[in-house]
Amino acid sequence: MYKILETKELAANIYYMVVEAKRVAKACKPGQFVIVRTNEDAERIPLTICDYDSEKGTVTIVFQIVGAGTQMMSSLKAGDFFHDFVGPLGCPSEFVGEDIEVLKKKKMLFVAGGVGTAPVYPQVKWLHERGIDADVIVGAKTKDLLILEEEMKEVAGSLYVTTDDGSYGRSGMVTQTITDLVNEGNHYDVCVAIGPMIMMKFVCKLTKELGLPTIVSLNPIMVDGTGMCGACRVTVGGKVKFACVDGPEFDGHQVNFDEAMQRQQIYKTAEGRAFLKAKEGDTHHGGCGNCGGDK
Image (tube, rainbow, N blue to C red):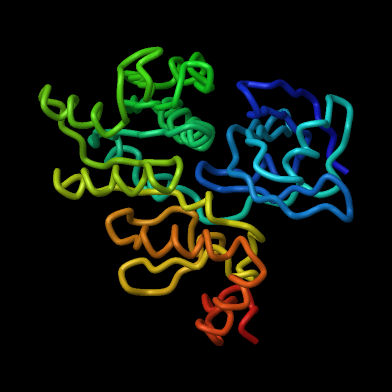
């Protein structure tokens, strides 16, 4: 059992929780995720880690209500417990393994959309703690849906906030702010974009035109989190990958977003899952060869 130490509602239907999970916190790295269950009969929910404190033994998660499982989670209070809190899972962000001195010479741009701000935060914080300040664009539909602004200000080199409706910060999509920054003479060596699939698709379309290497997180398409269900199957560079075991981060310019988003919609129905299983055969799940689901 994993005790919830703190909870709060960041915005409408978006919740923040600090959980006591000492062994998980000790092993966490930016870019990884956990799988939680509220009780032994509840569904497994994969969530990208928002923050962690290895000394205090805590892990912070942020989630949005999108179904019955997350609705149940939102009712939990400080002092309640998660039945399961498994992790850290997935591969850490690529830059974590780079030489720090080499990394300091790079100019990085992070683009966060909606709840995608949560997984961007620990990456920017990790860099900041090592003397590397990255520029960050945070986008939301409206001011009321903006999250973690103050926390991001403390770790970002420069923070640019944009809202689709112009109710706060810059007006328009995050892609417009990317264009503006480049036109203003800013040079970036790499971009990391995390948010809704449609946002990441158009960010990658733009950065490809700009010749800016871009990493994306495909956490939004994960369901089971182990490679067994096949929900997060995606084509990257012409090869089949599974976000939960091969990612969740990939070269955004190699991801087939149209296929992934279409598949995501089909997978939501029992009929759709049966169709995909028949179509994809032995590679429907476990095709990664890592999780054992193909045995």
